[in-house]
Amino acid sequence: MVVEQPDRRSPRPDNAVVLDLDGTERLRVRPPELPEVAGEGRFYVIYPRPSGLVAVVCTGAGPFWGRVDPSTGELRDLSPCGLGRGT
Image 1 (cartoon, one colour):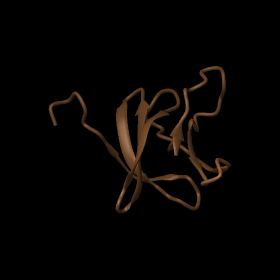
Image 2: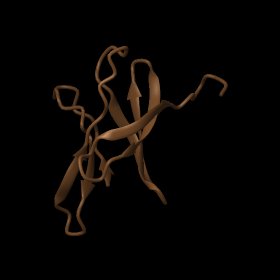
Image 3: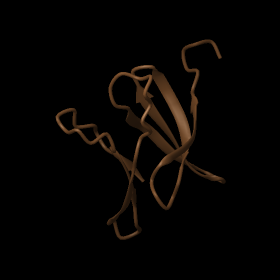
């Protein structure tokens, strides 16, 4: 898995990629659509957990985390991170 440098000129916010062992792209992780957030979210980090991949996406309303669906690349079970808010 790789989190690419976001290209602000591109309308694609999917800057996180899961690769196969040979380096070919398996899927792009898609950030969620958050109607209450102005602007698109961009991925900050993705890391493996025993339960699967966990991703952090940065948005105008702060960071959120969720679990990556390995078959679709969609972010599931989205929750605010609470970083910088004393939680």
